[in-house]
Structures are given as C-alpha cells and as structure tokens.
View 1 (cartoon, rainbow, N blue to C red):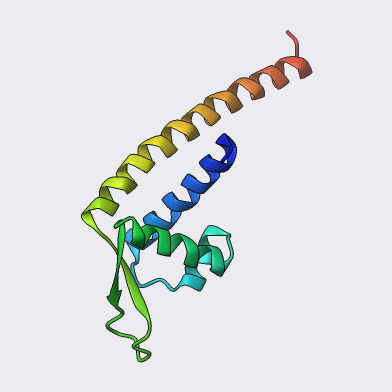
View 2: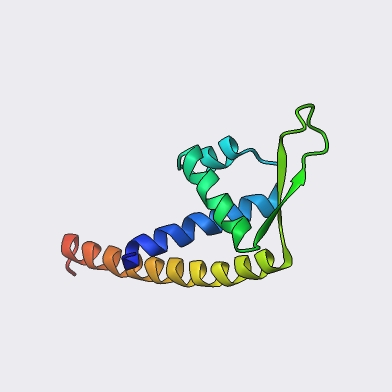
Length: 113
C-alpha cells in the first residue's frame, strides 16, 4: 500500500473502532453511512478486525432478528484503538500546523504589510 492509502485505511479503521466502542450494536449499514464507505467495505474491515482479535461478535440482545450482532472491542482492540488514536492525533496536529502556515502565507500575499 502507498503511504497515503495506508493512512486512509488506518483512519477508516480508527473511525470504525471508535464508533463500535461508543455503540457496539451499530449495523454494518449504519457504520458504512457514518464512515462514508460501502457496506461491503465495512463487512471486509469487520472481518479483518475480527480475524486480528480486535473485535468479537456478540448477540444483539434487544433485536427481534437474532441474526443481528453486536461488535465488541476486545482488550486487544481497545489497545489498538488507543495506538491508532495517538497516530491519528499526531497526523491531524501536523495537518493543522501545515494549514495554519498555509493560511498565514496566503494572508501575507493578500495583505503584504
């Protein structure tokens, strides 16, 4: 994977892990809508997260349709989410600093005092 594509993939995993930690009973369709990817992509990522031991399936207790699942973060999943959160925050802070510099440069072009 290219560096940019790898960052996007990690950002998507971060967002899915974060959403599942907040609400493990979200459907794949809801996750797809929240993250902005296809339901098939969510299915693929959930399978990968499950295979890595980061997420486990539980029964969705309140569902009339007992085929619905809750996606629960495992302790390993919580630790991975924390690590991804640190990397995500570092990237976003760097992007923020670069954006502030670009804004300052643009302002200087418009109003060179």
